[in-house]
Amino acid sequence: MSLLGEPDAAQTIARADSAAGEVVLRRRGPHTELIVDGVFVMDTVDTSTELDLATLALTRHPRPRRVLIGGLGLGFTAQAVLADARVEHVTIAEIASPLIEWAEQGLLPAPGLTDPRLTLVPGDVGAVLSATAGEWDLILLDVDNGPGFLVREENAGLYTPAGLSSAVAGLAPGGVLAIWSSHRAPDLLAALESLGAGRPEEVVREVRREGRRFDYAVYLLSRR
Ligand SMILES: C[S@@+](CC[C@H](N)C(=O)[O-])C[C@H]1O[C@@H](n2cnc3c(N)ncnc32)[C@H](O)[C@@H]1O
Image 1 (cartoon, rainbow, N blue to C red):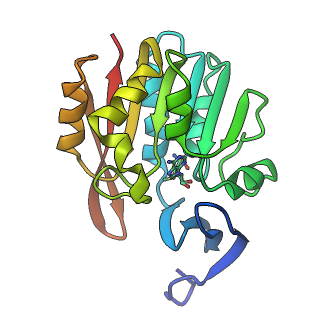
Image 2: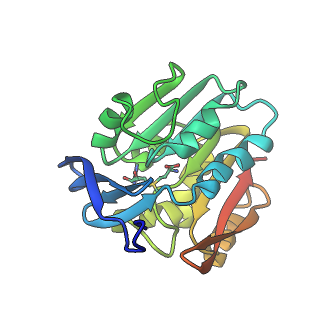
């Protein structure tokens, strides 16, 4: 809000075309916004659950050395993972590839994204999952607003039993899969349960935005 009580106007910080469509980083007052292919993806008004996605998974693993994140977004989940000294390597797959360049240039709001432990890979996290088996101690997925509110229709397969099974196969024994959602997702919980790979867990966090209450959720599964 401006001092006169009017909504702040948005200013474009960076803009580029990509295979995922136009990617725009905007500043609105003190906050940064990310828009991909005309769809509002996220902003920095409340990033507590992006951080929770990382810390909930990190606390469930005794020695999380290798971490895969899909996608980068504004970098808050990555920041929380890199803050853990036990982590030796982080790969982030990001389909909106200009974000990778902007992270390297320090344009993204989360600090620490030039950490030498970090590898940024342009492309679909689903492709990384298909090509890596038993490799990751943690896999953190935050590529949509949740399984019921996709940012990309092509991501639907990630939340099917086959897609989730591919994610679990990417985990080393004892590894943890964590999925962020902007809503409670009982179908996702049931699909995780149906894999028989471990008992899934739902952690719900209340977030208030513009006077409204939202129940965000993180779904976790530790591979037996
Ligand atoms: C909500 S943001 C992630 C927010 C991030 N957790 C943070 O802390 O800032 C979702 C990101 O996933 C990316 N994305 C969407 N589908 C993807 C996919 N299939 N593979 C990789 N990245 C994807 C989007 O371009 C976007 O940057």
